[in-house]
Image 1 (cartoon, rainbow, N blue to C red):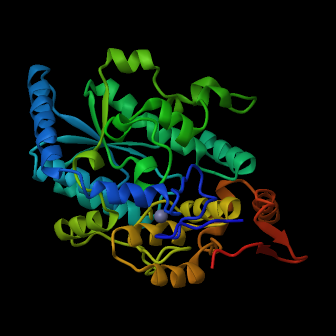
Image 2 (cartoon, protein in one colour):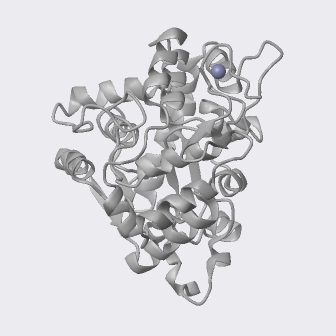
Length: 374
Ligand SMILES: [Zn+2]
C-alpha cells in the first residue's frame, strides 16, 4: 500500500523517504526546520569563505577563484550570477554536456556567457556515451547513470586541473527533497561517499567490458580520496548558506536575463512547470522511468516542492498530478530511441521490464497502477 505525505504529495515509494509519526515526509520536515535557520549568520559564514577564496586566488596567482558546476539551468545560473554580481568573484563554469542537447539549453547557456563568464564545456566520447546510456537503460531503467557520474566527476577533475580548490554546488538533494542525510555537515560540505552511494550507484571502473575500455571512461572516473585531499578540494552547497527555492532562482535569473528561455511548449512533459531541467531531450524519458519504477513522476516531485514553499495548495497539486503525472515521453522519442540504438518495440519491452509488479498490473493490452495516488 502506497502511503502519501499528509502535507505534500510525496509517496512512500520514493527512495529513502521517511515519514514521521504524523505522516509527514522528511522533505517537508526539512523545509519547516529551515525556517528556524539564522540566515544572517550563514551569510556571515559565507562572507568569511569569500575572503578566504580571494586570498587563495591572490596567493596562488589564479585567474578564477572558484568552480561552479553549471548546466545552464536556472539554479546553477542563479549561483553563477550571484557569485559574480553580489560577491565580486570570477567563477569558472564547468559543464557536462547534456546527453542529447537541445536548442533552449544552448541558447540559455550562451546568454549567461555573454554576461562575462568562462566556461569549460565537456562533451565526452559519444560512441561510449551511447553504449553506456543503452546499457543502463536496459539494466536499471535509467539512461543517465553514466551521465550522473560525469556530472559529478567533471567539475572535480577540472578543479584539480586548474588548481582551483573551491567548488560551489547548488542544493543538497537528500535534505532538500527527502532522503537520507548521513550527517549534519553533509548539508554544507559535499560528501563523496553519499554522492557515490545515492547518485552514481557504483564505480565507473566496473563498467569495462568488450565494448568499453578503461581509458574510454576518463570523464566518468571520480578522483580518489587521496587526490582530493592532496588538492585540498572543498565542495560546498550554496543552499547551505542561502535559502534555497527553485522558483526564486528562476525569478532571479529572469530578472537579470530577461531573454532566459523556458520550455517552448509552455510546460515540460509530465508536469506543469516550464522552467526546470529542460536542456536534455532524454530527460522526459528519465522522469517517465521513475513513474514506471516508483509509481510517481515529475508532477508529484514538482508540486510537492511548490506545496512546501506555499506556492500551491495540496488540492491544487492533486489536480495537477491527476492531469500530468506519468505522461508518456512522446516528444523527441524517435531521437531518444535512435540514441539508445533501439527499435520502438525493444524500447517498450524494456520499459515494461522495469514496471514494479507491486504497483503495476497488466490488463492484457495495457498497464494500470494497482493503487492510483489519487
Ligand atoms: Zn511531504
